[in-house]
Length: 306
Image (tube, rainbow, N blue to C red; front, side, top):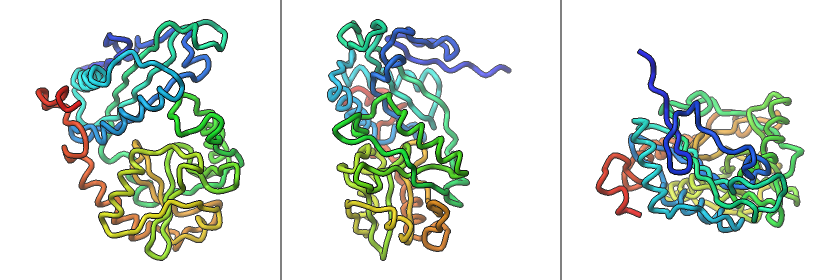
């Protein structure tokens, strides 16, 4: 029996994945002019949904992009897309572009923004090998965009900065890359936030380092504190990372990924450390809790919770 093709929401319509499209004149495609969110669904619960949706609208506000849907209508469309695809463990890619204009850069010629909702199935064991063994990273020569430039505080469609660093990591035989800010402090990895542990304390770069204020990062900070670990936001140097007891990355899709080697140097003993393991275990226990997000299949509660 053939597998039913997933549907994608595009500007008010649900169309088969193979036919989902936007205009070639869309400024999202031409100039990376738009914003997006990546969101996980665990056993029918959209994890940290309000936080992700709030960040989408904040990013849009920062680039003067008017999202053509209210948060309530956006919520209903996301839930309906998941339900039409019968997904309970999934990844949501929510995209809002500036819309179709012309070949010029002026966004005022784009009459209306476009909204796209993509949902894909994700196996709960996704990334298990990386979580068990850890990954290696380099220190990229590509600097993270400054907060007074195309800041990554805005989750925009322009990820060329990260793409170039990821290519550099692949060429070096590493899994990912840590990126420095303009002052030489570690900012984050290409699509994830960084944490290190030293002498029982946990450290993570501050927003001034040009990081994306990750939704998972924020939840992990609270989770670590609930487990009794002090979490300090401070400038982190490459020296700090290579001399840490443990290091790990956090992100929506990857969750928590241990870093066991930085530019060929083992972090700690080169294995996944006890603090990282404890946080990973605690995260698994909370991620599908209805209190942590929005239950998709409790129809009567979907709209009222916004």
